[in-house]
Every structure is written in structure tokens, then in C-alpha cells.
Length: 261
Ligand code: NCD
Image 1: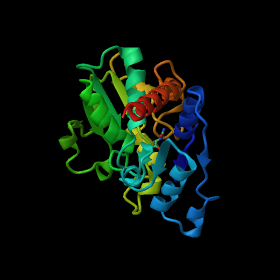
Image 2: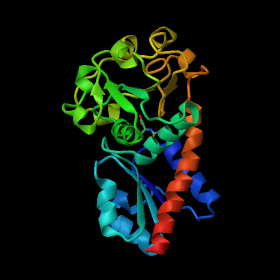
Image 3: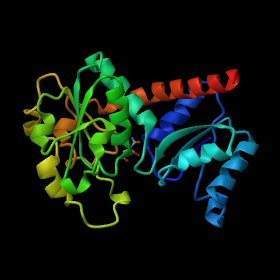
């Protein structure tokens, strides 16, 4: 069962496609049509879905730690499909697969992650995943969107787009997570794209052969100019394609672990 308490285009569809491809029955929980809208708690909701027969619950929720909380109250396998600004593990795995298909081993490769680092679960999961695979990860973004102490996760912090891009084998652009930002500390879209947007001109700072990623949804003309998004260097559609294979693997491995447990 997929339980998405936040909007999704790619993640939910690719989990459901992956589950179908493995021969599973798939149910898609609709938050607004469910008893959550009548006041039922998350814990009671998932206990009920487990009683209906869910072997796997794929959970996306605006609160950091929500999938961990779900896993504490059910025996079903729980896969985190994004919890607030905390983690998005299958996104990092599909990014790693996409990068490995294009660049080969990631050991010693330099990867820049640029944008709203403070509110991005994609950034956090990628710092963990890519550095575990041997890559050097550098993060950069507007100073108001850089979390204090991010280097403790095992990445470097670059102070400008030019510093982030220098020598990078790949650059991953991130969307400003407007929905997680209560105050007005973000630059407007036009200011943001002028300083941090990837355009054919800023890509000249990258070595030849280096590639561009974005987890989507892309705000065309803000994080990536249309020319960059639609160019040969853009792996954005390859990322989406990798998502189905990675989620098939995640589901199969988790279910196999359950059967053998
Ligand atoms: C991301 C997410 O939801 O964290 N999208 C995705 O899963 N592909 C990134 C985003 O929303 O900006």
C-alpha cells in the first residue's frame, strides 16, 4: 500500500509500477478520502491498513521521522518515500544508479548538490549514499538555505556556484522547498535563478562530459534553464527511469528479508 500524505508525481507512480511489475496487489491510500480527515491518527490508520493485509507500507509524510514512527507500530515492512526534510532513501539510490550508469564507479568522483540544502531530504540522503559509494560530495546554496553543521554528514560546503561546479563530474540541482519554509528568508525565483540557476553559461564552469541531475519537480527556468533541462547533459529522465528498477529492488529485497525472517 502506498500512503502519501504529501504530493507526488514520480515517487508514488514508480513504486506502484514497480510493485505491479513484481506481481503484487497495489492499493493507493487517499489521505483526503480516508478517515484521517475525520481525525484518525497516523498510528491507528496504519494499524488498520496492516489488518487489511498490507505486507509493505510505502510512506511519504511531511514530518521528519514519520516512517520510523509507523515502523514502530506495525509488523509490515515500511519504506520511507520521503519524511519531511529528513530523508528520501530510494531517491538517493536511483540517483546513484543513474550516475553509475553514466560515470561508472563513483569512487573519487566529485558531485555538487546545489539549492535548498536546508529543507531537502534528497540532499541529506544523497550525501549519505554518494559518500558511502566513495564520491566527494560538495553542497552549495543561498546562505539562508544552508543548514549549520551540514559538513558533519560528510560533505564539503562551497560558498558559490562557481566553487561548487569547479571540477564536478555531476551537479544535482534542487528545488526550493517552499512548502517547508514558513518565513520569508528565500530569494524570489528570479533572484535565485540569476545566482544559482544552471544555464548553458554556468555549465561552462563544469568539465566536459559532466552531467546534470534534478529529482523533479523542476521549475523550468528557475533551477535549470530549459536549454539545460532538455540538453544531452541532463539525466533527469534517466533518473525517473531508474526509479522503477530501484523501487522493484527495494520492494523485492525487503519482502525477501521478511520471508526469511
Ligand atoms: C523530491 C521530494 O519529494 O523530496 N521529489 C521527488 O521525490 N522526486 C524533491 C522535491 O520535491 O523537490
